[in-house]
Length: 560
Image 1 (spheres, rainbow, N blue to C red):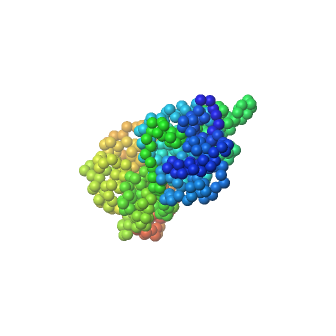
Image 2: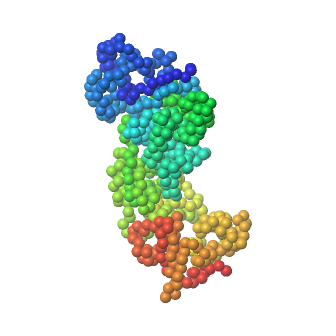
Image 3: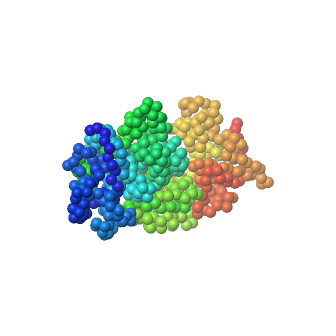
């Protein structure tokens, strides 16, 4: 079919079919009036059998000045104020999306038809789509409506990610809107060890829609060019426009020499919108989706363990994590506020759980996730009991499908779990007391030992004058510390009682327990020396802690 021009129907034209027959009487009054050639978005002139019911009635509400309070989909003068619990004329969210279609202008039907054939008769695809989109579609639709943007854009995450906020492409694009790291930085989306804003449904949706609006303005109100620029970059689109202009060719989207992916991007979106507009005509049975809020954003002003909060709120912890995959460790970041998505019906329970999450008189609560190395004979339930947490929390945090664990495996421990006092010396503490030397054990590798002592493989190899690929012998002694003075995070001065006053700069991944163990002092001493609350000893990278260390320990750490 050759390209032709289609006019987009305004949102209030598209009404639920069960109301339209009430217009028939009014339509008769308009018989003989000249009507514009309007069709449903995506229906070509040759598809007369599938024309809009408004065409059949020879009535288009757009022509009549009508009351428009933002709730009615046809003029109040004809049907009056209908009782509608949703306030927008739609019980089904898909109907609401269709009613908000707004992309119009010239369309290359051949390119669109190609993808209509791709989507047609793919029932399993649309069954999964309904399931994956249901938590987030209502939120995205509301955000688009507030900005008066075409609701076809609510279908964009289907093409980008299948409405999966955890999706990551081979090109490192991530989240619902598949944002690459460079663009994320431009959009102001944060990315650190705790959090990836591209996977935050709320933050990424706001950033993506801001970006699309900016592109829409930049390309003089042309949504097709804006969408192409979102896909391939505004510079590529602008260069294609300038090239066509120099050659005297049209500069609309359909005429530009863009990459294959960018050339197919808009046709895919339009094809999907048309299939969803009339699914039964394309061999699809589309299940209704409730037009109601399913998730709500909640702001928290402290660090939250998502798994523990979910358990206390009666929410499935895996569901809460699936709504908030941006929080990579299962915790919000310390010392900052964060926004979480929670099921709408569980909002109050969640807020109550978060407000009561702090542990009363716990001796040690880690501000950062603790690691536990599984030993022979350990069970997940025993480890949970040791740390006063639950097997469910450990499974969710470590993404375990069941309770099976293996000796040597490292487990993350929830941030507000109890870190028990060490009853037995660890390999690390023995090494620090034994002149900074570590004895190689079966199964050890240079990289594993380096990771255990917070250094790099290259630094550990250089410290021991060996190569990074050297084979280690069981029983071999390795230096694991090169003296306090060599550590840029440590500054030490002597005190009158013969000890060293150490100023230690906290690094990412540190906890009070780890620092105490490193310097062979008690946790309660670190807390007392630094005036910290034993019930919630929060620390953060860059913070300076004061410790008092025995001189002999410092001597043991000096090289040689």
